[in-house]
Image 1 (cartoon, rainbow, N blue to C red):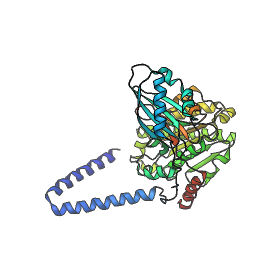
Image 2 (tube, rainbow, N blue to C red):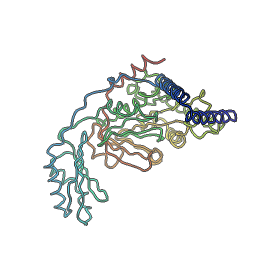
Image 3 (cartoon, rainbow, N blue to C red):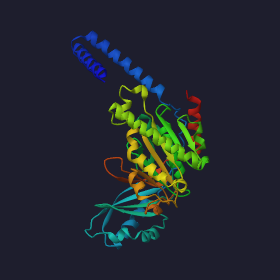
Amino acid sequence: MENLDKQKKELDETIDAAMILAKYNNNFRHRLVRALDKFDSEIKNIATETKVQYPADLLINEPIHSDPGNVREIANKIKTYFMDYGVDVDIENCDVNAQISRYSCFIHSAKEPVKVTKAEKDLLKLLKNNSVRIVKNPKTIDVEISNKTLGTVDFGELISYKVTDLVDPLTYAVGKDMTNVYGSLTKANGIIISGGSASGKQATIRGIIDSILFRNSRDDIEIDFLNLKYSNFEIYNKAPQVIMVADTPELVTKTLDNLIERMDICFDLLSKTKMRNIEEFNDSAYGDRKMRHTIIVIDELAKLLEIDRKIEDKLIRILQVGRAVGYHLIICTGENDSISVKLNANCMDKIILKDGLDKEADKLIGLGDAFYDSASGKEHVRRRVQIAFHSQSDTQKICEYLEANSK
């Protein structure tokens, strides 16, 4: 470490001297600029070689466009509805998403509109709509209703728009509310995805995994699937980043124990090198011993817990300490499953789909309509999003490309 500090100091002194000389010598300044341009080009070439690159048209699909119906007529009905409850509002805005439209209502009256927010069924009948949700804010009320024609959000569009340009290697595309929505496993210890049949759960899982596969080589990440339905993730066997698809009770238990053992070894390595986390370690002089991010995907959690209740304690331990050494969980559950309070509290991010584990999940439409709860930022935020549509054939394209271009 002392030798490294000495080298860094000498480099800083050399750079400072070069900058001073460049101020007073035009010829040297031009040579320095050319050298820096060449260095920048070489660095970009190295980055291009080490990251997986995809043809631009690999994932782009034409989305289905939504139709909100007669916005003016709907807005007038909403205003009349509030007036009947003695609440004076103005409809300030209507934001149209793929499956819902959100009408923002500014409250003029001082009367507390408690009854209004509890009478969604009346508004449902008035609008002749199959989905209405009322959200009360400090000075506004948002009314969310399903569109006349339901649309989709294209996964390829979100990926090409931003994810490939981000420094964070574990950024993933979630979908859209009124803007593009992205999450990050680097900032979160894990994510719980819950939903029933036809909710869009499998597309959600694929979207997160493929966002990360899209940008990282097998030197950067590894993915381990723990699932008793092998067919759910068989498609990923072609991806070189996928290390294990554990599909029997014995293999699931053994794989999870091995992963925790490896996690502990990583902590020992951080302790010995006096590093705080995986990012600091990988940026240090120990680069030849680079740590990979490890993503553990748990599907059908309830069935795994039937095999061994101790699995939950192991998952909680990974959630509590694993992020420092790059261990992250993606936990998926069905509509009739349950998650313990402790497990739920320890996981920072959640995606709740139709019939998922949330009291408001029944207000969702299905087909990717979801609540995205993120506590990995500065504050806890709930957003209603349309999950980006990502078909199994899209995943097939990615995995085949990875297989064909792996070293």
